[in-house]
Amino acid sequence: MNITYLMYQAERPRTAAERRADAVRAGEFAKALSQVFRRRRDAVTAQPARPALTLVSNTAASAPGTAPASCACECRTAS
Image (cartoon, rainbow, N blue to C red; front, side, top):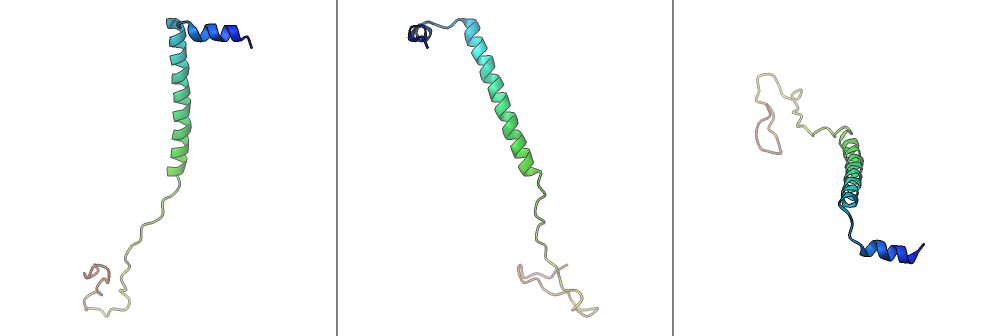
């Protein structure tokens, strides 16, 4: 590469058109990155969630007409 041209390019002020073109390129790059990360985020959240744990009361063991068994985790009767 021509070192003299590189020094000239680094030292001279950039024109408004060059600054605008750089801003457009930076915006397009940011847009492309956000699309990639959005696709990755959506792919991760699109996976099925684990089912929540639920309390299952033992209604078969209780006799008809008796109170339902109490819940051991909250000390309340299961409904």
